[in-house]
Image (cartoon, rainbow, N blue to C red; front, side, top):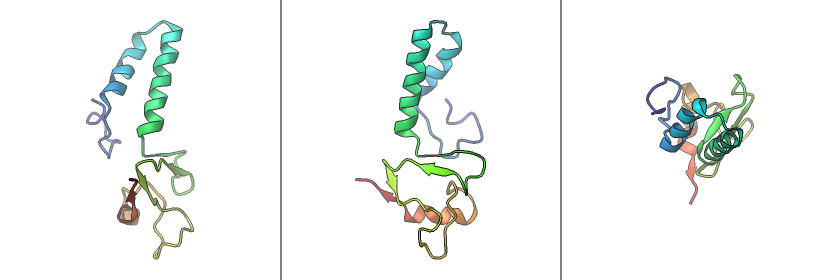
Length: 104
């Protein structure tokens, strides 16, 4: 599936239902069905994806979904030393992983 066939999926995110929809879209010609498929993908994305970069300057434009994990770093949050609000996968920003809290 999508979890292992590209190098940008560092978190190994996988959703077989999403993979199935993505594989079916190119062969679908019914507009109503396509709308339904894309709507389902958006619902999966918005409910499961923990974070995404809004543009390729993540230190400036980054947002997170705090429905599962909370306490992500942000610029000016008072952490000492400050943790860069990146994607928490590189350099000093990895320190931000130690501050995350599981939502109960």
